[in-house]
Image (tube, rainbow, N blue to C red; front, top):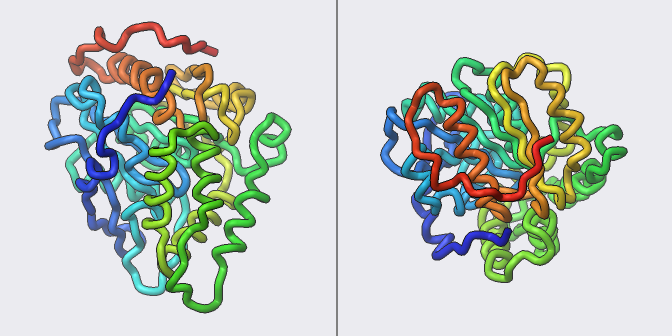
Length: 330
């Protein structure tokens, strides 16, 4: 199904806010919330993919059925968007730090418990959130992700060669001297668009993401953030042995046109959530890696019904989103 038509996408996200948090000696976390926080509505956290930002979830913020029923809270991981370490000389962070930071954003806003959705790296960040603060996470919704490190096992199942592809980015962003004129190349921006949205990505969306990536990683500080984000992706730890400790419901959505992580890998890894009361994989025909953007209707429908099912008595109207969308339950 085609992308939902968006209007003034970049302008709509000028409302990105900053939360000042204590983790790692001080963090500024970039986030966007769909409106004043309302305790009587479920909250859905949205964690974006590698070198994207809250704009990845423009379709969800422009869907009135979601914004009227849920508090949408998009949070940018460390090294992404407006999220920054604030301690001078401190450059290093991990995905565990981004998970803890996201929990602290919940504290900042006053959210006691939430559902958490994440795309690609966001998927393993929301899994980490469920591990470090299980009492705060009502359910997780990984999209187009992997729970392993960048292993040979995943490559035999059809996943990308992350160590090589991301390793070249680490090398290209390494410098012993300041690089004030740095900006990501057009080739890199096209790479992110092609693997995320598909090679047939509309020209206006391609132009938008070229501009956002170049802006977010401009200058020497941008280069350093980009390098650390790439190191995180290339050299992260796997979660296989820890997933048995995830005790909340899990809805894994995966497009069968995802060129980064494969459906075959997702089929194996969903089984590792063996202490979840409800762990399911839904495959979206034609879905790309950035699934919430390329197939928002399918994602929004599944997410809506998952939250309604597991929000423990909170009342929302799911009728408008129950049309068939062709997903296959595995």
